[in-house]
Amino acid sequence: MARVVIRSLNKKYDEFHAVKDVNLDIRDQEFVVLVGPSGCGKTTTLRMVAGLESITSGHILIDDTVVNELPPMDRDIAMVFQNYALYPHMSVYDNMAFGLKMRKFDRSQIGTRVQEAAEILGIQDYLKRKPRQLSGGQRQRVALGRAIVRHPRVFLFDEPLSNLDAKLRVQMRVELKKLHVRLGTTAIYVTHDQVEAMTLGDRVVVMRDGWVQQVGEPLELYNQPANRFVAGFLGSPAMNFTTVRLSRENGGLWALADGIRLKLPQTAASRLAPYADREVSLGVRPEDMRVAGAADPDDLAIDALVEVVERLGSEILLDVTVGGTTMVAAVDPSVVANMHDRLRLALNPERLHFFDSATEAAI
Image (cartoon, rainbow, N blue to C red; front, top):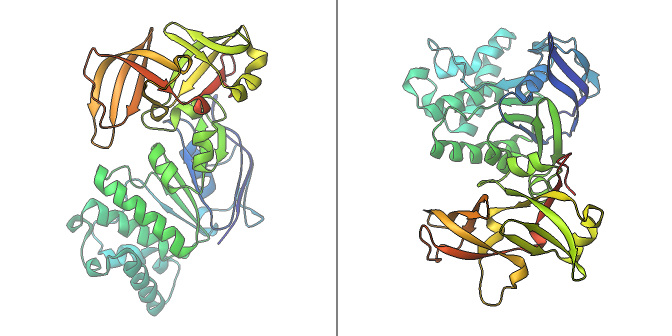
């Protein structure tokens, strides 16, 4: 396959700076996911790699070859789009074979490649059908097949599952991961769905306003976010945030706010020592909050008023108010809780996150 290197990549549309100094090194056979909210520059970055958008400045290399000026067809890449982009008047076979025919492959080679791709994707029984006779998931498989038959050095995916229903998206995520392992391809995948990013990516690139916020393995980003944006973007339900003041009392460092009085463990206290007597942002993931028991110390628990109870079977989500802050706690499904109940919630002291109030960088 191929290694893809992106150096100081920028894209401007008149005065609008869409992509800002992106630097990435995508290893051979790696599956990298670009994720972020709408307008963050992820699709524009992908389209520049594909050659569908011109580059304002910077370089893109595929296997040490600078491809800035190469047309898409000469980059040896294959792209799968959000809207399938199938020819409605052609059969599945002809849709998959079209690119090879345009490149003057002989008929027997085309037949072999289409049949192999169809078997990999489980659509060999649909080769004579037209796209209108297929379900959304089957159409997406055809679009994948059209890319696979090319045997490209790099696969590019532009939100390919966003038009599918929730159940089918889960199924196709699994199929895509299996496909990547089987083909051993280099892949760049764009999505706004953080669940897709976490489950598919060998590494995840989080983007915001054209800037790369953090690059790393999914659990690395989840457990050690570089800043408040990454912490809040990854995770469902999202991380809870509140502003606290750090204060030295009784030989320890405390996080104080309306309804919050937490004694920080020594590891966190050492790290936060320079922020004593200053305000910082405290982040707590919902799964790191639980209903406190008699053995839980008071200095690691908070009082909460239950506003909404969401029973999901495997867990219960409690929308609570702590002082003047709204939070979500993911608790054990055996917990008995109702609206307007007052609960004591214990926090996992080793899983508290703190962010600089001015820069939003993790402390």
